[in-house]
Length: 406
Image 1 (cartoon, rainbow, N blue to C red):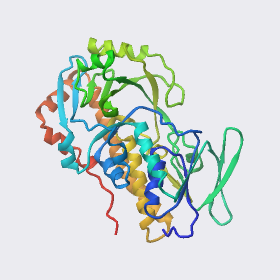
Image 2 (image 1 turned 120 degrees about the horizontal axis):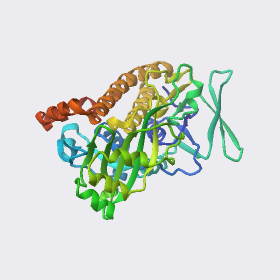
Image 3 (image 1 turned 90 degrees about the vertical axis):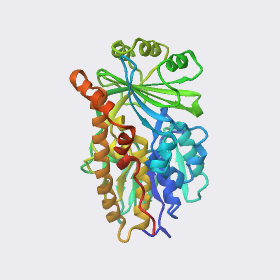
Image 4 (image 1 turned 60 degrees about the vertical axis):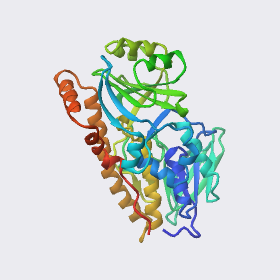
């Protein structure tokens, strides 16, 4: 793709996927114009895990150094029985992971990553960012370009035209509505209960009686599982518990009865239940988008959750968005033919990987919520496997790298 003299690529959505894409394009001399529906770019959510397949990209884009002081490099992933609090297995991270996968495994607050991305965006003249404008309509021009209409809450409109519109507008994507054969978002039947506690608070002290604060710890039970890890240079601890539940409002953070979570936790350790009682929880419905459906149409392509939102049980949501963006920028910049053929090849490549990631997440959930004889078999298998062999199982995932530029 030859960017000289071309209109900027349009990007709907300035979350992790959209910001990463804009930076990756700019570094290849390709201009972009981002539109974000939020009036102010305030990060939602709390913690996220950034495995080496994502952090190597952030490093190449000049973003990692900006957020590194607030991120934490956990020393291990621990799996614990949520009833007895016994350690079932441990996978080393820290320096061992960095040596193995040649990039760090980090945990961070979503806001810290977003601020680092925004800081890098601000350094590039090739990137224009407009906030408070929501995609309202898409049409095709007589020349075959895409015309996108964006609208503010007070009714102002802005029309932009380009050869390519990229929908990075999340699980409830409006861009996706204009792509034939795309999938609707669906409620997964699971709710994520999220909270952030201060490490030196009463809740933090209660947590420290059950787990180390410099690890990623997952407590396993047939009725729920709970993941915890440090944030903000260790000053905070991110908690996220997962339970089955009926559908709640389509929103990232919404009200739901925490009694659902508390009932599930009564079947685990009394100490976990006591910790939960000290915490103010926010409910997040887990919605998915089938990655097998179409991600593109002439002049349009979806990335990140807009294309393939999967449940977070492989901890790869942010990483897959970052991979999507970086590889798409690479494919467009190095395409020998048309951008359409580059996008088609990119989509096939990404779908194969996302399918594998989704299977890994489903396997994790099955193992983490196992009961009875299956849980006993799981514990036996974990006890017999070495940390080295468990790490080797992740080489295909964490060792992924962008193609070398020529």
